[in-house]
Length: 172
Image 1 (spheres, one colour):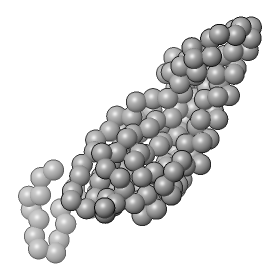
Image 2: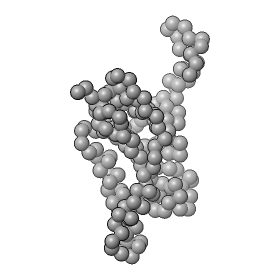
Image 3: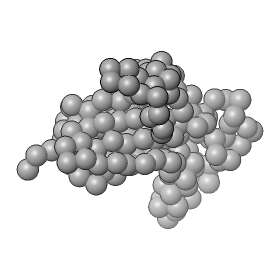
Image 4: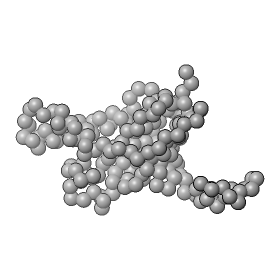
């Protein structure tokens, strides 16, 4: 981003606009080491969907892994993201295109970021989100972090079409 026209003590027009677009992410959940409540909720959502698939299949046994993988393919999503590191922090930028920002839940764990949200029903279509059936627009993504972070100190902000998560690296 260009910083032409910047003078000492004054911000550029782009910086001023960026500040106006920034707002704290309302549903940020920061987690202590171990499994987060959000990750556990997601596991339960996947298990529930896999059970629905099993029932729809006529309760035919021997396909539990296929049912689980299908549930994952319907609910989990790759997060278009970028990770930048400094000696003290990790900055994660996650693209929110297609997600309703009012439904976002963000979990920060020591080694990953978890995002849960909904695709607006107008965008889901007759076969469900991402062309799959049965999840009503709910989508989830996990992003592994390159280093362990101090999860309780993490901050998340929605900036335009991105969620930015800043976390302090854990000192060893």
